Length: 258
Image 1 (tube, rainbow, N blue to C red):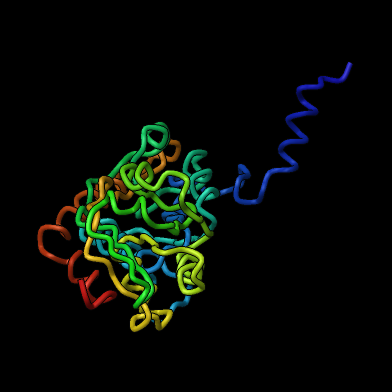
Image 2: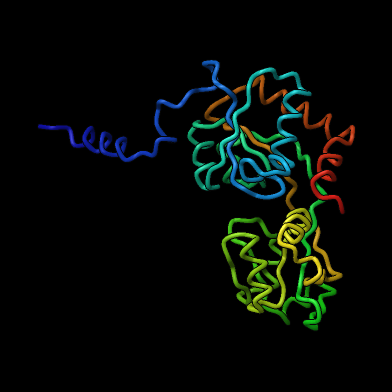
């Protein structure tokens, strides 16, 4: 009798996406170090962006060099869920700009925190009569959120169900300018970048209330694809870049205003 389990395994293998197959290079055979991420300007820009690869892609390259890693680095931009899948299953080496969670501890090994100054800012249309001076004031307004991004739990609790959610920050800005929400909330890095990119500086008003981040940024390596030399170089290099002010300099070059 035919082994049904073997047939099932063969069927699943044939359905697997190319990036999930066993033919992918591994870290130990001389292949380039593979960094996977999704577009998240200004931290991770789309390929070929005229203003650079993005803050955190540049920091990853600098950190590896500072830590003494001499191998090549390849960057692959994919949807975020796919990036996490690749890391969990050992198809990629590491990622940047990632929040630490208990579930991700299963398959990721973390760098030290390299960005702890993130603040969440709230924007409204100028002249809309919105006044947000404390977290509790959120009860009075409809809030716009962007899917796939980390928001502090305190903001989530305060807004309850009174929010609209869209796919990305560009869509979030359209949500606000169309009048469908009263406020949007964005991390101050992404807000400075995207509002400037969209030419909306004169149309929007930043509210006086800001919320400090509860989740610093990390870089993280796949536990299923260990590369101790690269991981040690990245960790040491990042710490050096934080100490000597290089992280702040790279951020300022992309953002200007802090």
